[in-house]
Image 1 (cartoon, rainbow, N blue to C red):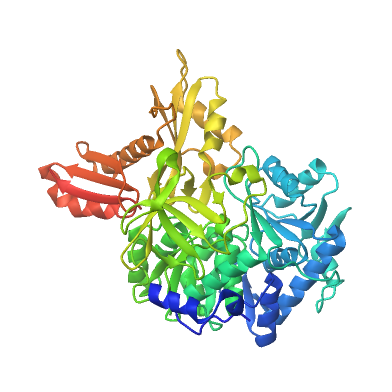
Image 2 (image 1 turned 30 degrees about the vertical axis):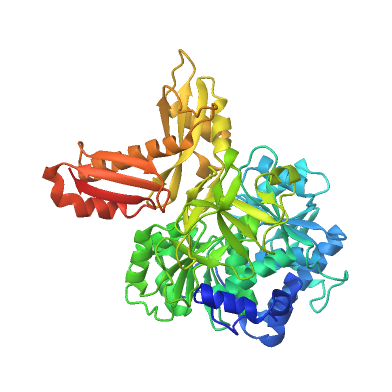
Length: 622
């Protein structure tokens, strides 16, 4: 098993000591994902691996599997997939967070490669992912009263001849012609060995994760066994995960946060995952019962995107004994300082930020839980062990230049065995993967201690509650409207979601269009509901650079100015406040609000309202 805790990582000095004490190949003895489960099942077979909550009701009897049982499920799943799909099969899945999802994911990686699918995508987008990856087996949730996953699965089978459907459904669900029942088929496979030979390992592709937008050629990131194992090792040691920990599992299992940072890392340490419903903290019942469940199951580590944790913090603890908690973990979107402050106030624990990308097997940097400065506002901590993270200047033509000085903002680059070998379509590697280096496209800087801070994005992805939205998808859809000449989508700050998509449109000469028509057009043509623009702003012309490209920094500032101005008018009835927004600074955007002298008593209240956002803000009296 991996050697995790011979040195506790607290800062850059102890991180270097950890690396120097043992080379990676000696510390990380596992060569496949399956090896992780074999190791833990050998050392602590009866330790609970997963506790599955469906409703979170006070009288719920949760389903539990220990590490020996989980290993058996993974082997059975791998054997099933090999028997259905042959050598090194591609296995896609459309499943909410279930024990069966873990069995499917890790079983697919053992037999061949997994293709996690966001089941909220439209059928045509899912079909493109299946075709691109060559996955010919699809594991999907059976008929459900709310989710339409099974309906989509049947439509996909019609579109893709030769696609084998495996259905995850409760026992007793009527059989369907040509459909394999997951539980029935699993019971026919051995749990103590693989029937097809060796598991995938080392540099074999373990998975293809979809990232980016849903138009054009799918952007699929290759994960190797070595890459996932290195990232998981880093997450386990930086998170100071212990086998006695209970970690709330709230991220979806089609996302690297759920699969690696709060999945494989936890399994490598032998802790217990508390799966908080199939839909995580999207379930209102889980949000309302969160503190009661933390107390009842003695959770030690709680995790979630900033949006979800903000919602949880609005729920009173109401006497629940949450003294078992030792830390909170968050990532996938920037953390508003106000959420971190409230978390400490409510729980007495730090909320640490984790930074990662699909292209880095899910992890790049981690604010170490054991560190004296854990929870430093704005910092995502230090790089993962056995990696190199550099902040580089932009050179001519936006090429990467020299390493930045301390405190200087530049683009974050990553080297290490956890960096993906690239996209499935290699033409997409240009500008992202270069000779083993990952250009994240994120702006950041370091402090004197080597801590990393995120200052924004050089790329234009809009991140809404951890959901990556490609603005091109919105822009292409809106360009199809006959009245629209140009469209530009950007993110506008939002206290709840971090960012919301908005779209600026310039109309064709002589054309008119209503706001309702623009929204209807977007909803008809944009497949992802989270990508539907919150607002449309009709402008005479879009700002352009000298080479004719739309200048999005100006649009982001304009959108933020409109949002803050509206907040002041609606929440405070201030009609004559001056709002100035500029790019730059440690959080990528600065907002300055100037109030008349007559509003001087409201300065603190306005500042408190602005602290809920991720940008820097300053309120003063003119």
